[in-house]
Amino acid sequence: KNQANELFQQGKFAQARDLYTKALTALRMDLEEPLTLSLLRNRAAAHMKLGHYQKAVDDASTVLSVMPRCNKALLRRSMAIDKLGDTKQYLTAYRDLLQLVHEGEGATGIATYEEVERMLNYMKPE
Image (tube, rainbow, N blue to C red; front, side):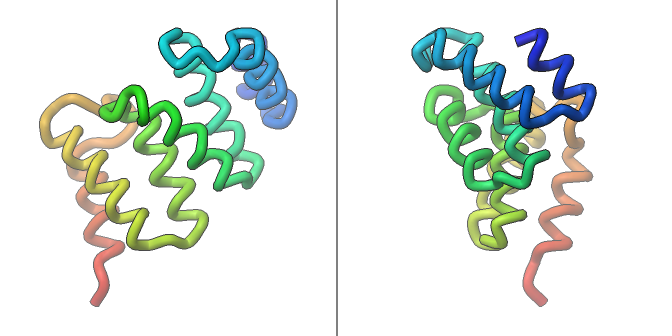
C-alpha cells in the first residue's frame, strides 16, 4: 500500500492502481480486512485520476456496502457519479455526504458542511 501511495503522490496513477489491485488480489478482496477497504478507497482515487469513473464508483460502492458511513468513499463515489453525468445519483450521493457532515461524523479535511451544501445548491434545477 505504501509503495502504491508513493506512486500516486508522484502522479503515476496507473502504476499505483496496478499495485493497489495486486495487494487486493493478495488479500483475496476480504472485505472484513480493514486494509482491503483502504486499498479500495485508494484505488477509487486512482481510477478517478485516470478517468475511469465507473470503476471508481464500483470500488467506492464496494467500500460503502461494508461501511455505509465512510466519508472518503461517499465523496469519491459522488465525484465519479458527477463525472458520469448522472445528476440524480450525484445529488443523492452528495446528500448522503452532507448528512454525515451535518451529524458531525465525516469529511474532516475533505469537505465542510457549508462546502457540501454549496455543491448541492449549485446542482439544484432552476
